[in-house]
Length: 167
Image 1 (cartoon, rainbow, N blue to C red):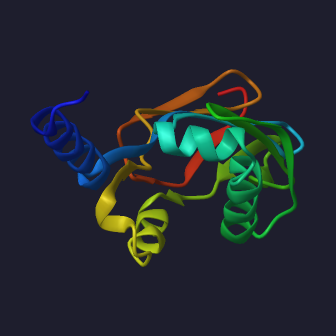
Image 2: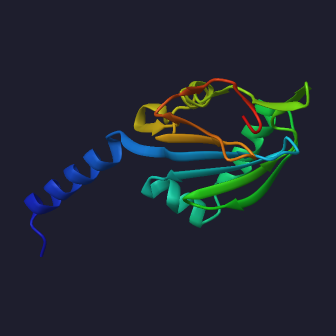
């Protein structure tokens, strides 16, 4: 027979775990590979809380669809989901970068990115005080077709990046 004291302590611990803020979505890395066609392959690595992993496993939430919609609205461009899972999603974005040719040189410019908007949207939900998401990737890399790489660490806003190919 379970003692009432043990049962009470167990219930108290369970309530503390369920009601305390939990670490939610954590962005690990974002790699944007810009192609010479101005399209891009975007690979997003992240960690999910146990509850989010459960929701993905039982197909309550689809991170690929959610991220696809966010990318399409942010870049106003067609996005194709190449891979989507509980730890990584990969997308193809048409006409991600802009291209300017001058004097025989091609300059590609990527758009600015902000992860602050995602946090603002999340704070509107009733469960916002119960979770602690981190949308800013630990590392963001923008890779251009000639191999040039621009790296940003733990930034919630990524500026536009321009690079002249071959220079």
